Image (cartoon, rainbow, N blue to C red; front, side, top):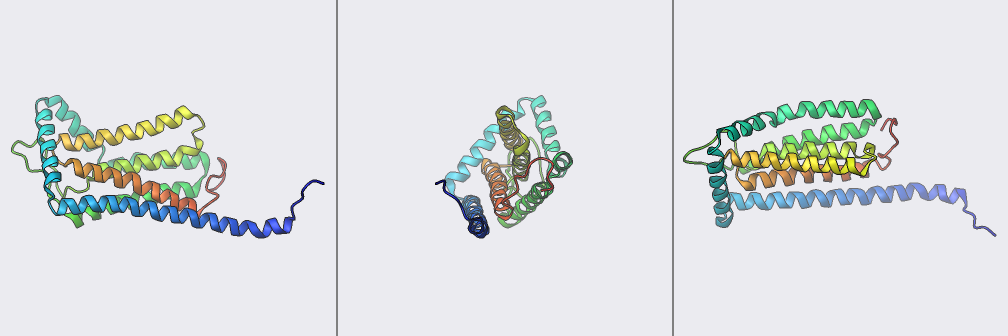
Length: 243
């Protein structure tokens, strides 16, 4: 005889399975957040303690990068333009526009709110980290550019990483083609790398600053998304659903 399932038993165990799955997702989110925090904290401690190998590496790279940039006034103009365009206050405007368009086309409300809230939180936390570490910016004999505030982590790198990662995660379900998904990831990576290079070539950040900023931005968004999945297991609703 064919095997049958008691509907009442299935209905009674479904909430328990959902709760268990939600718990596992939240645990993974907490572990991911702790891992990201540990990496950034380790770099921050090494920076604060002036660990010689790290300091020497940072200073040598910045000196070589700015010497290279200074040989090309055209390159410096491009770098300054990139710095202006990728300031968090300016980058946030197109980010909000894309989020609004995504919501208008899909009505995935909670997913859109997650992206906006996560990026705002990343922006705030990266600024808080600067105040806690208080690393001075590079001091050069012939600086290419000047920037106010502290150096670790790079706000430009952190915010570019957070916003581009959040956008990729946000639109991922509606990118049906593998090539579109590959293009989205590659585009995000390229923007992160160019922003990081911009900060070092201008001599306003050390390599450690942009590494920490990028790790924080990407890691924070991914950990936040794992938490979002744990909080809302049905988040991957079809396009048009109010999620």
